[in-house]
Image 1 (cartoon, rainbow, N blue to C red):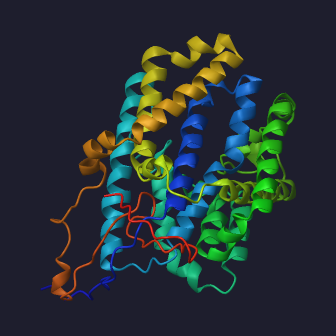
Image 2 (image 1 turned 30 degrees about the vertical axis):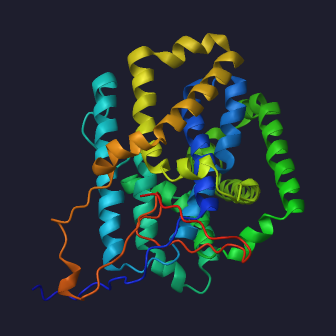
Length: 385
């Protein structure tokens, strides 16, 4: 038996999935796929307006939810094993696969840059870093303030793209806010009055993005700012101006995230089941988009159709996203993206007689879900798998 200090082993029963969180994942995953499908069409005002609106809040939304569901991470045996099998392994598969495709069609990258994610892999790398640093953010006296300062200052210096570090730091405040979110906030957001305000905010922001799409494109690269990774000077802003703009975008993203959270349905529906499989949709949709783009030049072919092409792209992306969240897809790709890897880890019984009862989640692997329900609502009995 190894003399290494044993990892703590969770002995708690697996938690039930929460319909609200899975509903939230479903709707934001639609925005992710739609946003990625519009990337090649942002030369058009209509596509740029929709793209800008989506990117104002969809990843901050996802990051905040990820932080909330990771708030009990302590680095026990089960959680460490889940990080390896459902973050590290999928990252290596997806990043290698995507770089092989772009290298085949474009000749780039000339050398594999596995630790420098070029596209989808950044979020898996970010979750890995955020998850490992969770105990730090739980221990600090002013964690949110610290995270905001890090985000604002990160744009001042050159940060290598190792494990997508610029985006990791730029979006860090939303993860830390999620870690410290209180259940009462979710309940408060669900009040009818707040939901009306949320609908107005989201609808109004959508109209503004469409109305000013051309104006913003002429004056400053807003879509690039919303990627949360470029230095301020690369975006044509000085240090103080850059900090001010990022601070404003942080506020806007947080407000719109709260609005989106307010409108997410609380009850169980078909979106709950689909939302439990967003993991596979996220990992696979990039391959679909790259194949359609590189093999068929799809976006170049449809660009002349203007707004019709944009609407068609949104509709097609919605269909593709739903197909990738179906049970057959999950059944086929679960062994690939969620390998058990029992051969890699020590048997936890060497350290304790209790084995972890694990029921992994889509985005917060190995983290128990504890979002309470109202007392008068019956508990859900749905499990992802």
